[in-house]
Length: 397
Ligand code: AMP
Image 1 (cartoon, rainbow, N blue to C red):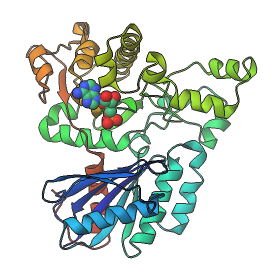
Image 2 (tube, rainbow, N blue to C red; image 1 turned 180 degrees about the vertical axis):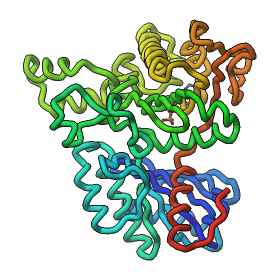
Image 3 (cartoon, protein in one colour; image 1 turned 90 degrees about the vertical axis):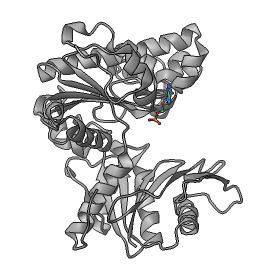
């Protein structure tokens, strides 16, 4: 039996999923979290059991050792393990990578030059690739980029109003969460092909959050820009911010670049506004004035971007919610969709509270969907396609 392993390596975690290379059935999925502090391995294994293992015996400290623990779990769970290809989530593909690529030494070096564009993600994504190369020297390594889905934005949505030399150097609106958007639009093509071919806004609302305007299946706009900091407020990231604030903090308040980085990436967003938590469930449960204000701002920015995206698309046929908040938080969906009757958008309260796939009312012109995103399956599909191109026969589900 041949398998495809997908890896999403972050600063202190590796998320993984194992797929049958021929059917793309997924027998094992899990993650190592707490790398560098209190490592744990949790997973759903082949027989459907949940496992949660403390890895604090000192042997697991980096991506390479975490991958060994993952492999040991996979081998204990399946009798016949032969990982032929490993698909990696890579946050930034820069100007050149508009599609997944098979990794070789030259490409890995090329992707390293993009680290300054995504300093909090890219180095760890690449160290995941190096760890997988060492663990599976005979397997194909495939990099799948979060920016790729957005690489064909029209120029007005790709540029900032800076002198063109900066655009030429790569200071552009890249957009992220592309693997999620690609999966969602492929799913929408299956369940509602007419809507998928029209004007669609997808709201990926998780700990990271962004929205994407899609026309005819192609991304034409994203709330995220040069980095994954722009747009919606997130768990700990600030979202849209006047660049003058950064100048003021530096020049008048004397904050260093790294202090500002920490403020904007890890101390802002829902956590910063509420002073309580980055976790939407905790904020909803807390019900304090600060928690409510954080939620109000989150909803307000989503509504504002939805209006802007409907304007760019010259109307709207479908709105899709995905991500941990988008898929599970019915109150947030309800608040986001309130008073959008002028756009022809109306939720069905009961369907929305029940978390059905279609949650708009019968008379809503805009159809509203909840689609559970699956970035791992998207990476597996891309990796399977590369494996097939390399000469292996494959039946992709
Ligand atoms: P993700 O990054 O996609 O895993 O999403 C994480 C976010 O989803 C966190 O803010 C969670 O609190 C939120 N979330 C997950 N389940 C629920 C739920 N049932 N109600 C509200 N928020 C939820």
